[in-house]
Amino acid sequence: MESTFKYYIGVDGGGSGTRVIVAGSDGLPRATAEGSPAALGQGIEKAWRSILDTIALAFANGKIPAPMLSECAIGLGLSGANNIIWKNEFYFRNPGFKKIIIDTDGFTTLLGAHLGAPGVIVAVGTGSVGMVLKPSGERLNVSGWGFPSGDEASGAWLGLAACALTQKAIDGRRAHSTLSLAVQNFCGKTPDAFLAWLGNANQNTFAQLAPLVFQCANSDNEALELLKKAGLEIAQMVKTLDPNSELLMSICGRLGEALIPYLPQDIKNRNQKAKGDSTLGALHLIFSIATAQKTK
Image (cartoon, rainbow, N blue to C red; front, side, top):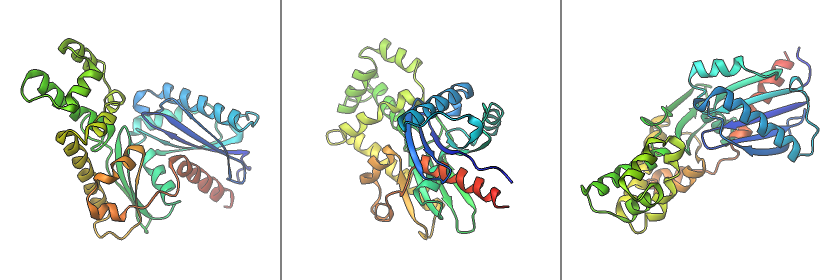
């Protein structure tokens, strides 16, 4: 039987930032913090450093004396945790937490959205993923293949599409539009400057262009069509995961919530506001597993 943990920590680590929630031995939240990205694809050492820094900030925010890591149990929902090599290396570099559980940020988002109950989520941010937890306990996911070939409807996906339109406009293959001019102004006004920007761009950089697509949607039909296409991609994920529309469904993430107006009406009608976020899901994951093991 394991001893009681002094603190339980839930972590959501993605490509655009890290969020942490700290709970006491009773599982009730006591402090939160936000920090720099912790996606595993950006490097294991970098991810751990960001997570530890954000945890320290959470304890400081809560005016809680920093404990020893061995007094803590930590659950983490991490972008890239579906890559078994990255996941195993992350486990291997555990700096001293007595209990550690790692899963994808999609799964912890699902747990948080429905407080551990069966349901469906599509989480859209820098990347995207759809996931279902069935009443049987089976879980399935769609999308989440990563940048640049997957993650449909995501910020990086929208930014990449906006760049493609802009490149054609710069070449004269299509007329400039409100969106292409906004993208060119952001990335580089000359072809050489634009090319230099592209040479250094990654998924986070492309995702920075997503707000431009929303800003131009009222004046640029191609921007509007990109958002509608993103809505259709989300709808396809939902229907693949829950073809009979039987389960609770939530569209999650800041970008996901921004795309709700562009969803097909039937999907829009089904959407329910998530009950909690990925940090709460990660906390639920570690607390439920740790406490279940203590009762055995």
